[in-house]
Structure formats: structure tokens, C-alpha cells
Length: 302
Image 1: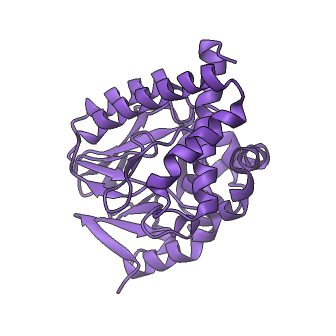
Image 2 (image 1 turned 180 degrees about the vertical axis):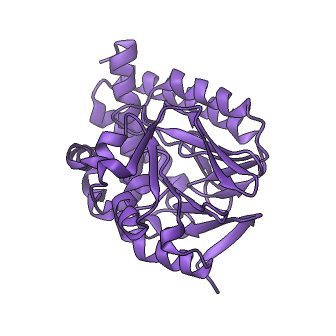
Image 3 (image 1 turned 90 degrees about the horizontal axis):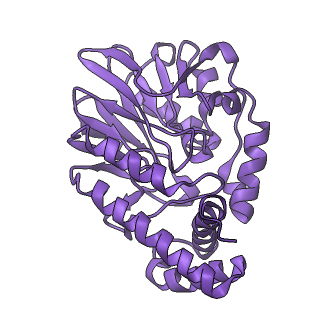
């Protein structure tokens, strides 16, 4: 049994083994004349990615594009390592994320603050030479050959440096974290609202922009290919409800840590069978903290 799974014509998914969980983190490979790798996983995903290329009979020197959707480490942590292994690939990254791919020092410090005890799971990020990086902001199109074209879609909200990618031939939308986490065999559709830059209104605008593309496939980094496009609307409603719930809790409890603990206690019974305890607490607290920062910055709730 191979390490990749075919999800559409010439499109393959690789389970990156994120946080030690099966089918939680993914990267995708488009096997075209100019092959593209969308997402990279963590830095320690490299060996598995190279195994996937070998399995698909894609020579490393033939990889044309490495395309992390944003510079959070579960999406871009392997960028520098993979660029080194695929010497002719151009790294496509949002203009706000590009400096962190070139010099990841500040990004790594920010990640450590955001994820706390989970940081050892996140690996590192090796610098990518500046000349290998192409900055984008949305609207650019990359031609892979055989009719495959990947359009860059600006997708702020989860992070200002996030883009989604839309493959026009398959009408496949690589959702990054803009549409949440979706594992129907697990806990279903889940939120991802991390610090330091979650923004509700931008997230909702992004979801509307993605819906207007009329995709046929939603290609989740977390996790897999799905045809239920109503997930975009469902996630928009979830985000609004989540922010409202945290705002109410903040006004009642006032102390940020008390708000986090409230949601840890509320969410843990529902999610504990799907996540190890340390990871679950860290993920819930991180998502609450992202909303608390948003409420402070944009609604004046301190």
C-alpha cells in the first residue's frame, strides 16, 4: 500500500501525520507536466513527501511549484527543506508570508507563544533562498500543463497571509484553513481561530469569495476531498456563533484564562475521543485566545 491516495484525476493526497494523528494534516500533489505540491506539512514531513514523489514517479528536479497556503507551520513548515530537495521548484507564498519563509526567526518565536506546550510537535522552518520565492497576493494563475491551472485566491481571516488555490480544470478548491477543519469520520466540522490575527469579518468575506468560485471539490488540508459545498455556509455560521459565545463569556467571566477554561470544559467531552488530552486542551485554548484578541482589537472588549 502506497503513501498517497488518488482523490481526483492526477491529484493525490498525502497524510502528513500531523500531531501524531491519522488523516488530520495533508498535502496535495498535482501530477501534471509541471507538478505542484500544495502545502508542505511540518519540517519532519520531508521524507514522507519525497517518498510520495517517488511513488508517483515524479522526479524531484521536475517539481515546478511548492505552494503553502499560509505560513503556519502545519502548512509551510517543510517549505525550506522541500525547496532544497526540489532544486527547480518555485515557492509560491502570499506577500505577507514571504519574508517569514525567507527568514523564519520571528515566525518561530510567534508560533512558540501561540501553541505553548504543543511547540515540540511543530518542528522548525528552514530558510528558503529569496530568489526561490515568488510573492503573490491573489489573482495570479500558474499553468501546470495538460489543462491544469491554479489560481491564487486571497483568503484573509484565519491569517492575513493566507491564500487558497483553485484548480480550474477539476474545479478543486484547496481550502487552507479558511473553511475550518472537516473530518466527518471524527468530530465533523471544527473551528480554527488562532492568534495572533484571526478576524471574523475577513473570514466571512473570504468564505463568500470561495463560494462564488462554484467549486466541485473542497480539498481540505485538515482533511481530504469533499463534495459538500454547503460546508462553506455551515462554517460561516459556526464562526459567527463561536465569536458571539466567547463575547458573552468574556463579559460574564472577564478573566481571559477563566474564559479559556470555560470552553475547555465545555468542548472536551465532545472532542476527547478524537484528540490526545494535551493536544485537545492546547487547541481549544488557542482558538479561544484568537477570538479574545479579535474582540479586544476590533470591538474594544478587554
